[in-house]
Amino acid sequence: MTTAKDLSVPFLSAVIEHIAHPIFVKNCEFRFVLVNRAFCEMAGYRREEMLGKTDYDFFPKTEADFFRAKDEEMFTTAQMVAIEEEPITDVQGVVHILATTKVPLHGDAGEITHLVGIIHDITTLKAAETALRRSKDELELRVVERTAELIAAQQKLLRQERLTVLGQLAGGLAHQLRNPLGAIQNAAAVLRKAQLNGDQRQALDIIEEEVGRSDLTIRALLDYSRVRPPQRREVLLGDVVQEALQIQRVPPEVVVEVVSSPDVAAAIDPMQVQTALGNILRNAVEAMPEGGRLTVETRRDGEKVTITIWDTGAGVDDQTKARLFDPLVTTKPEGSGLGLSTARNLIESHGGTIRYADGAGGGAEFTVELPVGPLQSDAEASQ
Ligand SMILES: Nc1ncnc2c1ncn2[C@@H]1O[C@H](COP(=O)(O)OP(=O)(O)OP(=O)(O)O)[C@@H](O)[C@H]1O
Ligand SMILES: [Mg+2]
Figure 1 (cartoon, rainbow, N blue to C red):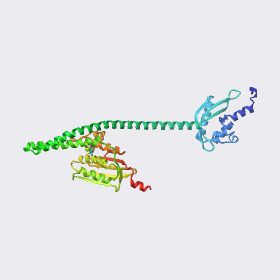
Figure 2: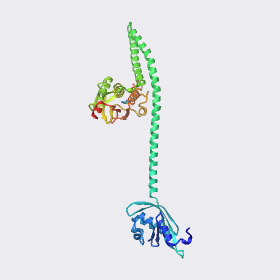
Figure 3: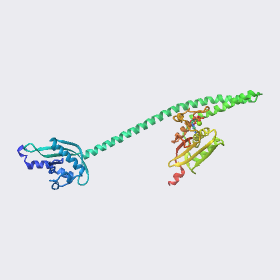
Figure 4: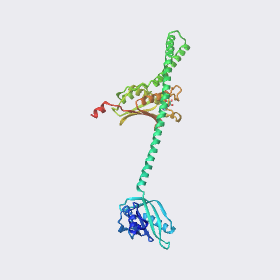
């Protein structure tokens, strides 16, 4: 067992030499008089090089200035100085982060003769702390993103639920109204054959006109309630656009321009997409009662096809914009407000999207994106 009297100078020197933490001693002139092995390894200099020299002989000036200021503080206050964090650049140019304490060593007369520095190299600790902070930040960001996604998914689910109920209601109502309307129409046809005066004929005209209009509303309700899974087949998008335009019977005061990249094909349900595009086109025509320009552009963007439709009407007012694709939203006296929500149902059941933007010229701009789907030509090309 080692006793106090065995603690000879060589023994203590050996202990200091083997301590894993860097240790140094400086005299009043701030020159190194002792450096242990751990200190030499950290700084990258040999002991013989260091003894008798100052920090300015080894470290960058800003670092040496800082070390000197702390040394002076210790000599003036005669108190221990603890530095929580300080950088030091070794001989290779590698920066270490240190936590250092500097304590005074007193001579026989009580005067301070030396400064003893004990270093804790916290470089790895700091790196781990930074990595931890970074992953915490990333984690927080991901939580925010996931929460936003969850909220969006929940809202979509709620909307779909509402739409399903509304769809069933609309479908049921449409069926029930169809029969009495048919009966009214038949009765009107029978009356038409009778001897009628002018007023009676006019009354019959009104009946038939209103029955015709109600029939259109019923058809819109049925379209809305009857979204079935798309029956996909490969078609040219330009053809679908042309057919949708023909059905709308665009009046001559509206100039139509179709900008279509040739041969843009997609695997879609042509009837459903035609109905969706038709609803957008009809709105555009209705938005330009005095005439204007209707432009349709189709193109392929990677795995998607995009159809943009814009007009030179007055555009969508701010109040309508917020609920544009919701059912029963209309600003038209005769409108059912089902055109755009039906279009969205049809496009979304294709895995596509539909969105609105104010057109550059003040009119409305609708963009439909649809997945291209599996095409024969693509399959052949990849063989
Ligand atoms: N191109 C457009 N320009 C201006 N406003 C538009 C345009 N397209 C849609 N809107 C606005 O959006 C509303 C909703 O359109 P939506 O097609 O769903 O219903 P609607 O046209 O009113 O009725 P319908 O069921 O007969 O189509 C319209 O009433 C109109 O105010
Ligand atoms: Mg409409």
